[in-house]
Picture 1 (tube, rainbow, N blue to C red):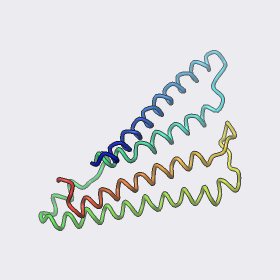
Picture 2: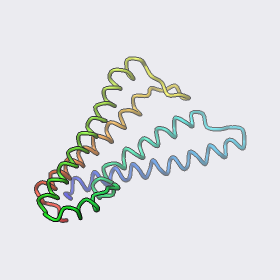
Picture 3: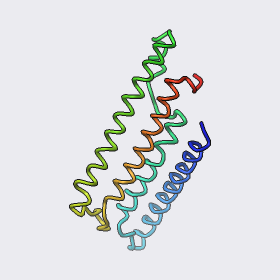
Length: 161
C-alpha cells in the first residue's frame, strides 16, 4: 500500500476512533444526566451523527486491510487455474464497485433533490440533515476508491496472493 493510501487510512481510523470515544462519552454523560433529571438535549442526533462518522470513516481502512467478510475462500478453491480466479475476482470487484457507486449516487441525489430543497431537519436538534448524508456519501465514495484500487491490483497482479 502506498504512503498516501496508508496516510488516508490512518486519518480515517483516527476519525473513527475519536467518533467512538465521543459516542461512549455522550452515552455515559446522558445516562448520568438522566439520574439528575438533566439529560442531554438532542442525544439521538448526536449519537446518529457520531455513528455516521464512525461507520463512514471505517469503510476505507477495512477495505484496504482486506477486513470485509467475503466468501471468496470457498470459491477460490473451486477454481484451480489462476487466470480463472483472477477473472472471477475482477468481476466481483467490479460488481462491488458499481453497487457502492450507485449507493453514493443515491445519497448525493437525495441530498441535492430532497434534503437541501425541503430544508429537512434532524429529529431533536432541528439542525439540517444534509451533513449526515454528505458524510455517508464521502465514506461511500472513499470505499469505492478502495474497491477500485483493489480491482486494479487484482487485474495487474501487484498484490501478492
